[in-house]
Image (cartoon, rainbow, N blue to C red; front, side, top):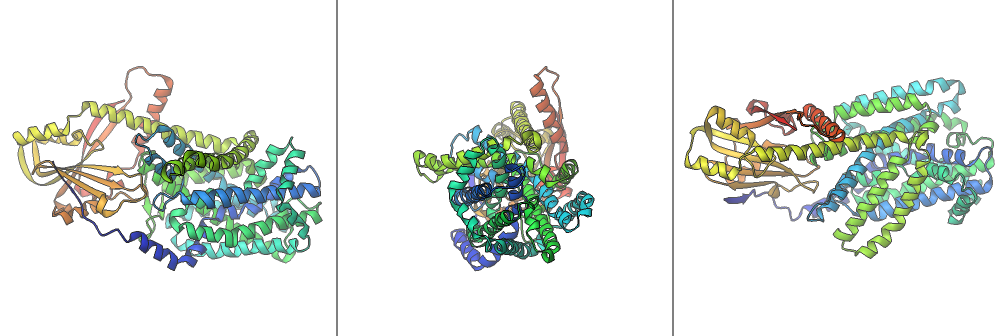
Length: 640
């Protein structure tokens, strides 16, 4: 069998060109990072210090308590964001891409046997992200609109209806794409962060003594003196770092340098100024600590700040929604979820996509949360478990990358990751204290998604095993057909199959019913790489059995959109005159039926979930961008 690879463009200078491009557009990338990367963590001052303060005090706050809370917030931001994510996690890129599934794919690629526990960590982390994705829009927009209560107390009954309207509009406009809106995200968030810093500085200059909270002694003293409520308070303190995982998830969009510069040059200083400004305000107004962020604003700036905060929270929500689309596409390409409808909203930027099913699911769940909890204070109790769980998974995967990819040595990797893991674990345990108050919401969503992904993977494995038992070895079929050729008709037939070794079911049924072969028959298998993208010169591999049969393997990165006709067009460089108008694609459409054999309840439920998802999966023709007029579908029935 003759093997050839498609020759593509030279790729030796790609990294250099990307580096030069990033350097040239560095200011633009930094500005963009303000809106997309830091939207979530940038709106945390609306509720983080408030909830920590309410959890620490029953009435007026004491001086040492305020200093203790500020110290805990400062060191949480420093250790989790500055050291863990900016210092280490951002370096663990998978060919420039970030996110839980990217880190999982990178870590798993370092093992020859691809261990299941690494895959499980990726599945858990991805599921927890979705739990976070339904809470962020609800709690962020609610906390901003609640500023109306300070502007005019009689507007309180309108907070929830206004929040619902804002969220419905936000999810409705997703179908039009975020490209146009994204151009103003950065400047708006730039104004937001400057407003955060200036409003905090205004009170900090009147009481600079709160800066002693930079000393970790005050944070430790608070925990020691408040052991009975330490878990609850730490769960609220953690709200200050929710959104840190977005730094890594959006790595592929902006690059490490712009994200790092934006954090240290603007985000981190402005957040600290605002938190310490809130602390200084509360020290001078202990009787007005119900909502310090809005209460510390001068009267003339209150309504503009409410409007700006609402815009900032919408942007933060947009970033999470877009992240949910991207993560879902990665999960589909990695065979963790069934195919879904993916619509591209930009002709220039491949990452800008819209997924109607995910959008509707998120909207329904977010609205249910808003109506059920009715305030950001109540909803904040549901925040944290998903994020801390995802951070724990990230820490373990980071350990694997340090050890097996960076070759740092296991003792050194353990010495670095263990303190970070223990801090994440402490916050995870503290957030568990809020489980009955709403923390069960993201936990339930995550468990459901873990069950769905596990059922899909298990069902695919069982289906592949059954199909492999029933199929004829491809090489055996090719040899027989070469010796005894059926009637040959002109044109090219492409048979899609996921099994490299076996003959496609569509080919067997075509021979059985039509009793003809095309003059060129291509057995096509689409694979997903553990890398986010695959270079053109590595994308297509052709194995020629003989003049009648060819084996073609097309490999896409998990961040790429599978486009079979476009990929096959690369084969023209080899002399294969691929013509879509003289090519027919043969697909096997499987109808799945439950096996009459008795099975355990878990297996039975898993199979039913798999069959339901398989029936509702998007059509392969649309997913692979195959012209519908060139497709022949042959139905088969299988029992599992």
